[in-house]
Amino acid sequence: MGQGQQEKVTTSLAGAVSEEISASLAPVDAELERRYPGDPGTRQPVHTVYVPGDAFAADTVRSWGDRALAALDEHAPDAATFAAVLGLSGELAEPVHARVRAKLEREPIEDLRVDFEDGYGNRPDAEEDEAAARAARIVAEAFADGTAAPYMGIRMKCMEAPVRARGIRTLDIFLTGLMEAGGLPGGLVLTLPKVTYAEQVTAMARLLDAFEKTHGLEPGRIGFEIQIETSQSVLAADGTATVARMIQAAEGRATGLHYGTFDYSACLGVSAAHQASDHPAADHAKAVMQVAAAGTGVRVSDGSTNVLPVGPTAKVHDAWRLHYGLTRRALARAYYQGWDMHPGHIPTRYAAVFAFYREGFEQAATRLSRYANRTGGDVMDEPATAKALSGYLLRGLDCGALDNGEVARLAGLTRADLESFAAPRRGDLTASA
Image (cartoon, rainbow, N blue to C red):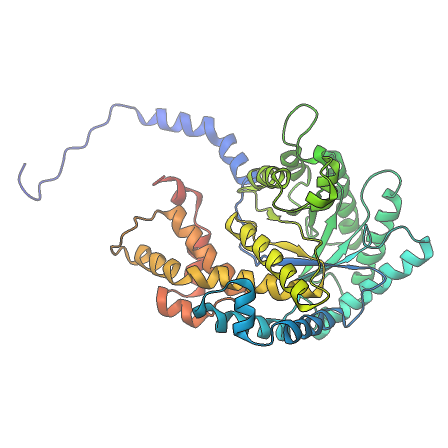
């Protein structure tokens, strides 16, 4: 065949065959779109801080930041000391330390939950009513004056019979208070704890639907997180993954799955000394959560450590090393969010997150640039890898580990470019797989 001569293209199947197959798969196509819409593309906070309802105040966010800075000043007053404690490489010491301090000054908490469950306990109804109303007022004022964490909300009591009515009332008071103060803020997050059956998730969805109808809100406006704290929420009596049913039972309202380290461990009989986020039981639960949530747009959050960085410097350093190591371990396993229980945890949360993204951002930016420009390299990347690379860079930008300028210099891509790679059309991913 001469150069430039076109190949003869022939087929054997009638066009009707393809049309019939497409028609037969139309319900599957619709199901894929409904069940697996993909990541929402919004910012995911790197942590959640729980503050008891009676302790929450207008200055809580700033107070936590100031206490975290004070801990740094006392126990690691310079970059070299902080790096030595955590084992950071020399080239990371200054940028991580500087960014941690800047973060604590600018945005010490990314996600705050006013707790009316375990951290609050059972109180007289009038007392909890007042605390819920006060929480609504403070949250509304914080979003209005710019002092709020990017995400804020409450953890109500669970849907189990003894506390169900109390939890529903607290949620109603809180949401109604926000509406009366001007409406629901964009960063509103709600957490439903101790979920055991998918029907409890359905009940929460119905409750929020009723609230939306009462106030003329857009259907589906209010989402919520599902807290995984019982063995039954991971494995049902028939051997299936309950958590997968829960995501569907939320009817599109589920925003996250949060692992409850201590309740879940205790449920399995793990002794108190071994209840930790790196226990094999924890790894199993989170792996099931991760698979169940993949592609659904529901994010997974790790739990916390109860070892607090308090006391003499040597003890604080030990607690910091533990927290830093657990956070880095979680990030490597794609658990990009966790819980922090004490202001002293925040420096090592951000140190671990910033180091994770700064260590790999040059390689990620270079690989993504080569992919975008179809140039050579020692790694052949596909659309799915480009999605992961851009997602990595976007997470680094969102939390403050990276700057737009330095990523643009290496990758030659804008944030809009990164977002387009991070959220490709379904066919773009499957065509080359």
